[in-house]
Length: 132
Image 1 (cartoon, rainbow, N blue to C red):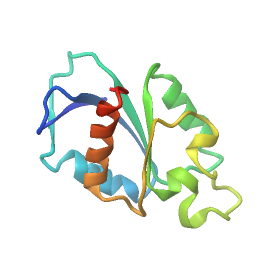
Image 2 (cartoon, helix red, strand yellow):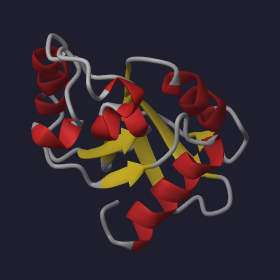
Image 3 (cartoon, rainbow, N blue to C red):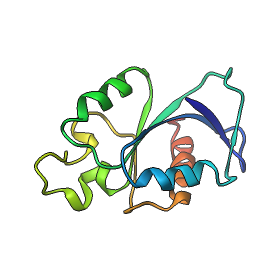
Image 4 (cartoon, rainbow, N blue to C red):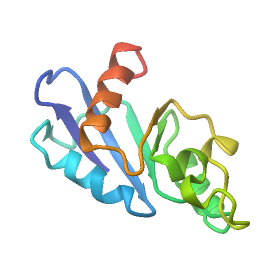
């Protein structure tokens, strides 16, 4: 888990755990390295976000849930159409119809794939809404 702070508002920091499952992962990695976020020392403790980025198949659900449950009090971000609804694969039998069928999702980031700046905006919104 890596801790980041918003460059524009260092008081907003978050630990990010990425369940990188498909192409949305590339956009997430661009967001994390864009300069809009700065790595901060790992010793700081605070809220965290697990980002579900990509297609969640039924076979992956137990592993994704294990990851989420291993970080109590963590917010879940559904990043992209596949994580939110199955995306273009929604009618494929092994594809789940969204991670929110299994866990509570704190925020959704739309797109296929979402733009990297949408991730930054979602972190800002979680902060404004008091979730971080």
